[in-house]
Image (cartoon, rainbow, N blue to C red):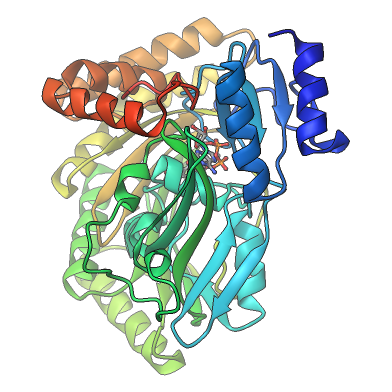
Length: 442
Ligand SMILES: Cc1cc2nc3c(=O)[nH]c(=O)nc-3n(C[C@H](O)[C@H](O)[C@H](O)COP(=O)(O)OP(=O)(O)OC[C@H]3O[C@@H](n4cnc5c(N)ncnc54)[C@H](O)[C@@H]3O)c2cc1C
């Protein structure tokens, strides 16, 4: 289809301001620098009814639709040639807040920071959140099944999902999740029926466009941030890993990130403790932590800050490349040794100073993320470094997770029977194959 004709029809369908040329509303590249190239147009529906109209139009015209939130992913998983990019950020309304049941119903394009702000004013907070900057949308949290980072401490964001609406490739609206199934009944978190919501987690828009969701929320609780500084060494990392294990067995909720940067003076561990039961509980936890640090021979907190509990704030990071790996506790110190001995010296030559290893310790597990900001003109060297880091991890027998490379490697190892079922599912929900056709798993 020709661009002019598409724009004309889309404007008639959604309104003159809602359709335009690619790059008009959405960033040209995602956070990792992967472009959505060759797209036909951008469309920004303002309601679920408009999403339905758009999907029906696309099915009739055999045009692919690629949904988008803030484009803060960094793995470039979508193929966009000839597709209409669907910017969902106009669908950003808070549709309902139930303070008794502690749940919130929102449109899929609402940004995480915007939702957080709305909840804070009522003394409430999201139960879990991705640690991207706050522009990431709630819809993509389902579509990506955003997990690592902060999600590691309170479970993935999707663990708090109790309701979902999705416009399938047929144009039909599917409700899933206990809170959406029954009309006029209170919102339970389990329905007693098979729950379709899981099918849409990590589906990256290949089965449909998420338009609405209901999430469990929690009361806002006091938070204390403890900053630890230490001389980076394998012994220190092992001590930190032991501390994380202790915190986990004591079921103390801590959002914990250890960041080792290019210059050792900047290395730090941030431990964020939350006192869900109030300030006294928070004090008790801090005292427990300080005693534990002493016992493990680790330096006590350099400083502590009372932070208004919020997920977002500070400066928005600049574009970077990353290699992330989910690793059991035992392997974290091996990864950190790799960073100290092999990766840090190499990263130093590749970047203008922004690179590091972030390690997350959580109730749900651990993850490590090697990141660096590519220096202009050193793209080839950067790619070689990325490949070398993955080889290092493979030698340790660790799975890595990295955008396209991970997607390809995972696809090759997917159980063929599972793959067949995924494809079958795709045909049921998206018979014309118009929903984000570039997603590898399908
Ligand atoms: C500094 C930083 C830290 C990050 N930390 C984490 C982290 O801790 N954990 C983590 O998992 N990710 C993390 N990310 C990656 C990213 O921020 C998250 O995955 C986030 O959920 C992406 O949101 P987005 O709105 O930018 O989605 P986009 O990048 O715009 O879209 C992501 C995918 O979802 C699809 N999609 C978007 N909206 C919908 C919808 N409504 N319906 C169907 N499909 C849709 C898109 O087609 C695409 O395939 C981080 C990113 C940055 C920059």
